[in-house]
Length: 217
Ligand code: SAH
Image (cartoon, rainbow, N blue to C red; front, side, top):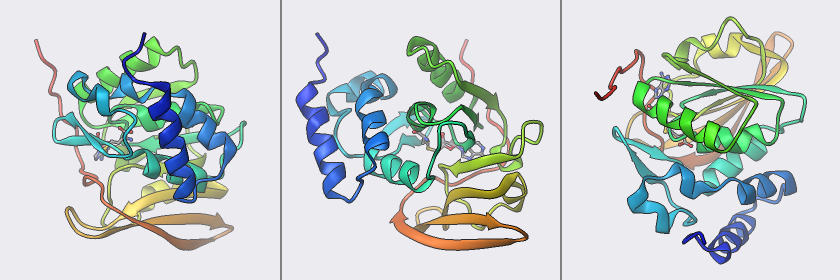
């Protein structure tokens, strides 16, 4: 039997609801994705807490409320192709994968990406494609994307990513410096224009250019 109780999951879902997350599809995705698979062993007992947790390499798995909120604001539909920048543990990826056609996810740390890939295999997620790269370049070979989600904080909206957003598409990106107050920004492409909406204040690790090859052994 899993040490991660069903009760703590129910409690988490109730907490998300009380924070204003009401989208039934998003809540159901959160309910079904086992967050304990995505956190380091020493933190498994806290997997269903509504907290960000360390995943090594100075990075964190995002707080469930933030994952749920960003996912809701993406306004996903089943047929959509989504680009995610910042795979990290792969938890947000797994949640997205239940709600769209395919997720393309990019991570700059090689070791983190390999760990996430193992989890996608273990959970048999058939619709996730991964890439070890600097995500601020996007993924030009498969662009445009109906949705883009950035899970590391950018100083400004990355223009390359905006270019790779399909007409009518939505991009959610945290904006702000490292350790400073940051704000989630929702960008919606309308013809040649982009509408911007400011969402929750957040705290994310910074979006950094280049890649890190930290393979062991
Ligand atoms: N969505 C993740 C959260 C990861 S934290 C999860 O659910 O676990 C943000 C991640 O973005 C980190 O893993 C970090 O290494 C990665 N990152 C930062 N800058 C990046 C870049 N330019 N390209 C790709 N990944 C980047």
